Length: 367
Image (tube, rainbow, N blue to C red; front, side, top):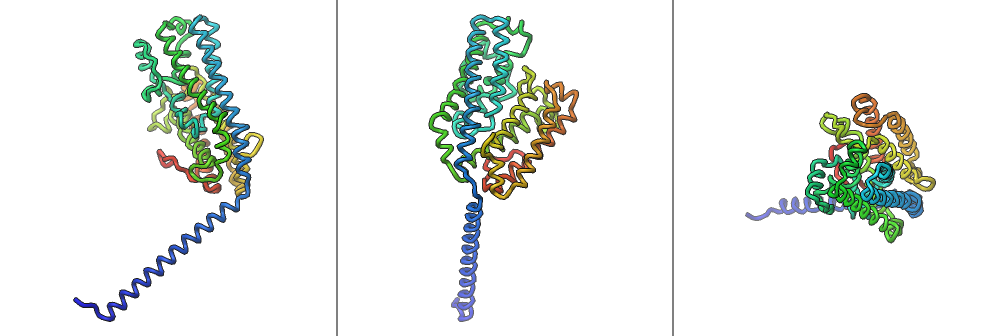
């Protein structure tokens, strides 16, 4: 069927309308892009100095502290395996706690070398699988580098091996197979930590300092994502929410407490939060607090600082061991959890938005 003249004009009219709409959309997107760029440039902040301060004054010293603590722990375990004395066991238990506390200062830095090594998974997957550990000991299996070994090694496995019973019974248990497994666990821990510290003290620090901007691959983008992911999943959920039942279908799981056998779960949580606060404030130099102030978000920084005080107050009112606190002081734990929860919106939504950082890790619950 042929086209009439009026149909032809109508078709041409529709084409012109579509063209105009397309040009209008492109113009709008370009204007938005220029506005976004202008917003980024409006933040007058020395990002290079910010990153240099964090790496030199916070990150590297804390990795060095962990490295030294793990080396000391390894040496003391070697002595314990050789002599099996009560004084040697006391020293190992003390060194384990020191190293576990040092770990809290870097556990939220899961990017760069730590991500490459899978440091968190390798050194602090809990609860530890005690039945499988005992089976491995019987079979004298000491291969630690398999993915399936993540819950059979690291700090939680050492906590079990060195704290699960009275000192006299622990010493009586130390036959050759058990000593072999203990030595293998601490050697794996030492290797992983040494590797990450070696990378940071080598070339990675300069790479971190020079990776400017706020995109996904930038240092600022990585550290804000890593901080938030740890705070949400490992601090809120792992240290408090899951053991008290809020993050485990309403069923308290005290057996899932960090450092279950050593009995210092709360002390680790306090140390971890203190380290994240220090990181946020940049210790004595430029930190995320200064970054927010430069982005005309001093009000948000003050809100964050106030919430940190509230969390501190709730955390420091708790007592170890955590399983007993769940039984005897449950409401205080719930109150603490609620204060911890409030900071997530400020750190995960408001702060990245004001600094132009995209949160890229996947939510597990939609908050």
